[in-house]
Amino acid sequence: MIILKKNIVFLFSILVLLTQTGCEALKPKKVSAKDFPPDPRKRVEKNINEGKGFRLMGGSNTGTNYEFASANPLWRATLDTLDFMPLASANYSGGIVITDWYSENNSPNESVKISVRFLTNEIRSDALDINVYLKKCSEGSSNCSISKNNNDLVADLNLSILKRATKYQKEIIDKNKKENPYIIGDPKQGDSRKKKK
Image (cartoon, rainbow, N blue to C red; front, side, top):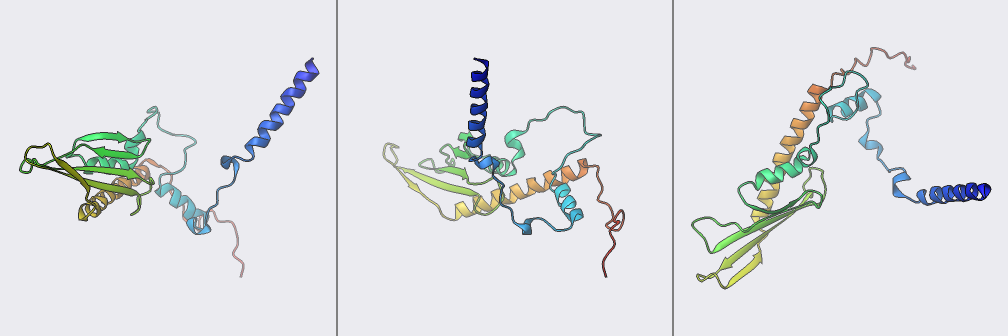
């Protein structure tokens, strides 16, 4: 009976390992050599500038800081740009922000609604899918027509959000630079390799 249990556990372990080899997480990620400088000191400098890395000793003892969505500069920039409009839905995990209908005081029969869908967390021109909807109602407000109005307003919103997100990203990188106590050494210092002539 014990031998049978050991065999079942052994076979189950092999089965689990075989199924895991087909998983995407265990396969190596393809990277381009263009993304990483060949000089190790430049790679270290790039990682420190981007705030990547860890500290072995001397780290701060302030405890855990959970920032979640506020750490994403694109998300923060979108919410700050649409701050003047009431939000109907803001779902960080779903990657979408939808405003409620908004109208100016001088035009109560026209209102606008904006939806922003995040296609990536990277700050780039194709990161956002922005749609603007225009609702026009007659004087009695019983007959309303809604149309998609993707004109210059979409381009202006996209530009405004990306500019603000870039500013937030720069602030994060500068903050990480200040908090990182490691100094990049002089390339000549500590280089024991002799150059071939």
